[in-house]
Length: 159
Image (cartoon, rainbow, N blue to C red; front, side, top):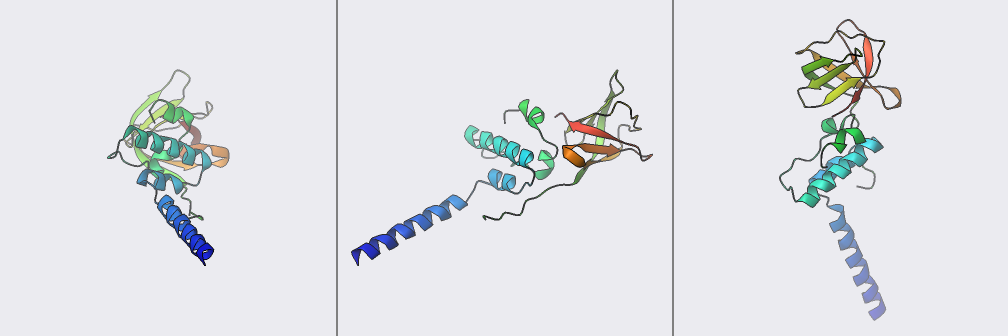
């Protein structure tokens, strides 16, 4: 009987420990919902840095903020069992700044602060400041922007 009581007590203690471990900080909850491995891992890195720095009031990374994120994007900043993963297929924004380099490649700054750089040198898009653009997730981890005329080019998020 004492052995059964000890086993039951150990089981109850284990269950309470598991229940406490299931409660994650809000920053980590957001990351757990991301579907793409790279974006989820970068989100966790950013969230853990926030938690370690004691930035309690810092907003949790959002799916939109992590869209297209890669190590280059975050390097310039200090940064249930079957969880339904979130994956944004596209985001939209307004071009607040546009620069065309000597190589003809466009560098866009969106109203959400994200910066994207064109990757296709052979495509000349017709995009201007104030235009609304949609960035769509394409094949093999690439992203593309389509202009008003229907031409599109591959882009990479740089910040």
